[in-house]
Image (cartoon, rainbow, N blue to C red; front, side, top):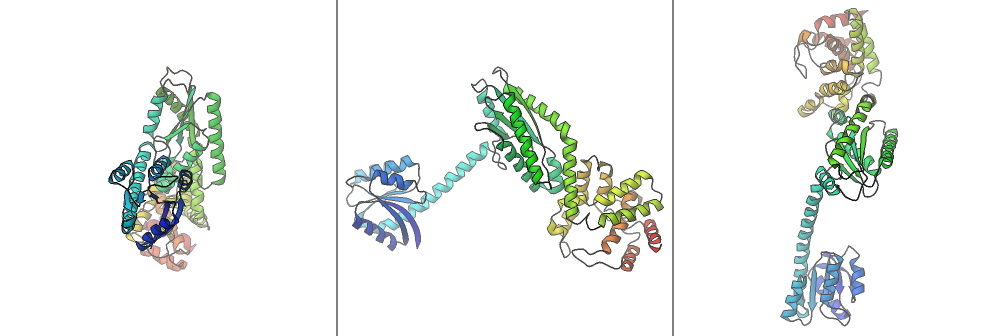
Length: 475
């Protein structure tokens, strides 16, 4: 049986029982409240659970037209059905025009259940339409990701506030730092999370009545009404404190927000000009903090890489030691040795942007998974380019999976086109990978690993450097 939650406006216990029996016979299990006064109906309508009102037409202290009026005043859009012993056609038509959905004579109660079923179905359609329209209206003036107002709403509010009684007006311009770096390294999903966090920090520090909008990918604008420089400085301080508090807890991926403001006391000055001034101040703040903020993000990504076991477990140390030995033997200068050492430590930086389900898969990768895995040199390169400490080896990170015969990725370089630092790393990394356990296989013996290096010399590896490695190994 279908559950029906209904308000029944009825003063007769006998007639109530008739209604309930008719509904049960029609397939409805009824949860109901019976009322017979205006006050009782108003109280019942405060409870959102009720799906419908079924009302007697005329009672000593209340009537269906009065009940219908109460329902309209409540703002609830639920079906209203009149059930009456005697009702003339004129009264029935008037009731329908007033908003009743149906009227049924008490000697025709077999019609009640089908009418209820129809009206519940129609009500569900109206509710879906209402929600859809509300969503469209909401999205027309709100940003879908953060729920903040969007640029359209913000610009309309600026026009409305021009010359208003809300001066002094302060415009806040805020920009989330290094969003592109986060998107490139960890993916848009992580970038979206940081955008939402930024929006929450900016919103939390606002006063009631102030306006905050996301006007671009990483750009936010706020309007502080009846707010001068002192209030603006308090807001900026609150944002900075909230950002610091967040970063103290979320060290794995810190957030940085550049912020500036401009205050207008003169209604004759265009608020668009005030926005431009605030934006200029914000960009100066971004210049002052950009290198530090970017360094924080890169350090956080390196820490994440370490936790994923690509720097931990002695892997980087072993690579560094072996790479340096080969580099010295082949006569690399001091700078190249420094680059090689740094490359050995961070060459897999781009793997922070690869899902764990792929990195730690205990079986072979599918073709689609290999496409994702092969992105990590490019991701690592973009991260390194954004870091003053790593930009010098960004090109080496990009090319560290190239192969001697040209079958590597992402550029398909061949032979001496591949930087020597990358050719050295390829041999050392392969040897270390083969002689240590991986999620998908057990470690090989040193002799087995050497045999693999010989097998792929001239194909995957520089044959001259393989000979150098073997000579060092024999020593």
